Every structure is written in structure tokens, then in C-alpha cells.
Image 1 (tube, rainbow, N blue to C red):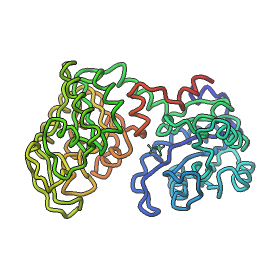
Image 2 (image 1 turned 120 degrees about the vertical axis):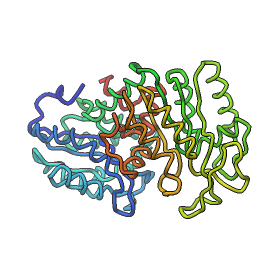
Image 3 (image 1 turned 90 degrees about the horizontal axis):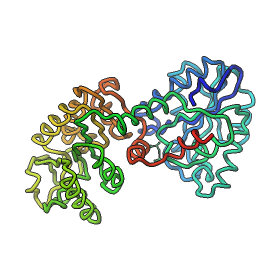
Image 4 (image 1 turned 60 degrees about the vertical axis):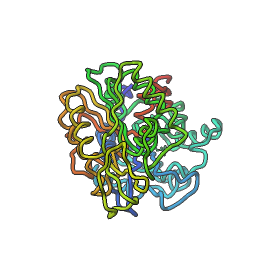
Length: 397
Ligand code: 3PG
């Protein structure tokens, strides 16, 4: 169901889960993409005459109140974007939240403090979560809207349990994300190329399993590439390496060959003696990495080769930076891949918080790409073919 199916919302209180988990430098938001992505649904609810109670998390405070994880910067930025004050409660479901909620008028927005300050939010105990969900709903909410796509893979009180207690619907962001990711699983135009980066292979195991079936070509960069290079019999110096995944990577390479799929690894890498912005970079062949250097980016030859494969595809999904893009000397691979994605004649999807932040930090605009997903883990789990609890619960109701 979408928000249009919730009927007349005028004068109603809408409880909404958003994903406002943005990167911060102190109290400064360094990428407000997730907040901007939450605006259309919130505007639609306000235009419909609702009063809106926003639930969100920031970071992983693990059930402890910790000002470092306050939603204050997110509430302020959201207020600027909406053009209305967003009143932030001092607590999650305590006196402050209850007072703000009972005074909430049509056209007003309030936000609960970080829901992960409450230990029950992420509890494995269903009864504990249900108890907290009752308190969320008990803030006077008439309906629940699920719009935090980045958390729909989490079985948590504000994402999953609360949806069982109220009439509910998916917000515009969740609808759009699901529609695009569905295209990647059911309506792909070939060639379908998937570019994977980021630091760990172990985070991507299941998705690689599934993508070997659906994609034509897998392009591997980022920290995880060194485990693949090792699986191919190469030494990787002091680079990031997951020894316990070498065998798995070897199996992937063999499986790809059996299926007639291609896994493309870099032929050259940028190395440096240490993980530092001013460490002197050199380029070397991927099969000749010096033992005292670490790989921090794919090399220029590989960046060009990756870009050529991407540009000629009709469907591309990219998750994970190619190198340490935050340091200028190691940003070239990520930049070239992003640039190539902007030229795709077909559907290009950037998935994952890090890749989204990377393309924005490198000066690309959101509409240079077909879609920038707000979900990291959520988009990967969707592509794994897993059932996402935060979506399944909406369908079930
Ligand atoms: C994310 O950053 O991917 C989402 O906000 C989910 O956060 P989590 O991985 O801490 O649950």
C-alpha cells in the first residue's frame, strides 16, 4: 500500500520511520542525501494535513543515551529542507516525546530522539520490542508509514514491530527504491554489469552468490580485491586481506568460469607504504605488488578497463568505492567508475551509503545517475533475494 491508500490524513497523526543516518564530522553533516531523500514523503503528508512524528536512528549507540549520536543535526537540516520547524524530543518515548506528540497540530513535524537509545529497539526478544512498539504507537499515531529504506532489512521495533500495530503503508522513498531494485532482479537489460568494492569480501558473500546467477560480469575493486588477487595466487604486500575468505574467492572464480560469467579483477594497483593521505603513491602490476606496500586504489589501466566495461553495459549496479576515495591520491579509480556510470545507456544504480557519499564528495550530482539508493545493507540484501522484514511486514498487514 502507498500513502494514497491510507485515506484522508487531514487532522491525523502519522508516525513515520525514516533513515536519517547521515555521516557527521562533529555536528556537521557531510552528506545529507538520506535527509533529502526523506523530504518528498514528509511533504506529501504535511500537504495532506497530517501532523508528523518522525522516528529515526543515528549510528549505533547500542541502547545507551549518548549525545554523540543525537539526531539534533538531522532535525535541524530536515527543518531547513521542509521549511517548517522540526521539534526534537529530548527522549524517545518519555515525557518530552509524549508532550510534543499530544500538542502536535496538523502541518507540524516532531522527531523522537535516536530510537537506538532504547535498548528494546534492537532487541532479539520479540516481546521486548513489541512493548516498545506499543509506546511508539501510543504517542497518538493513527497510521504508520515506512520510509526508512536503509533499515528495512532490520527486524527492529520502529521498523518492523510497530507496523503490526497500526494501519500502514510504504512511503514514496521505499516505493521508489523497491521499484528500481526490482528492475535489477527481474527486468535487467543485458549486458548487466555489477561493480563491487568496499573493504570486506565477507560483507558481500551472499550477494556475490546471487549476482553470479543474474549478472553477466562482476567487476571487483576496493579493499576486497586483494583477497581475490590472493585467491588467484598473487602476493598482496601489506594490503587488506581476509585470509579466511581466500578459498571462498577461489570458489567464486571457478564458479564464474563454469557459468560462463566474467569476474574482472584489476591488472594494476596504486600502492603506498602506509594508509596516509600524504603517503607517496606508486603504480604497480597487480601480480607484482611489493611486500612492504599496501594497495589503496585500482591503477589507471584498470580504471580505464573498468570504465569501458561499464559504459557498454545496459544495466549497472555499483556498491562500494574502488579505493580510499577520501584521500586525493587514491580517489582516481572511484572517480573513473562513477564517471562511467553517468554515461550508461540504460539503468545505472549506485547503492550503499559509502558509494553515495563518494560520488557526491567527488562532485557528481544525484541526477547524473539513474538512481542512488539510500540503502547499503538493505539494497544488497534485496539483491541477495532475501526477505526484508520491514517490507514483508507491510505486505502481511
Ligand atoms: C545504514 O547506514 O546502512 C542504515 O542506516 C542501517 O544502519 P545499521 O547498519 O546500523 O543498521
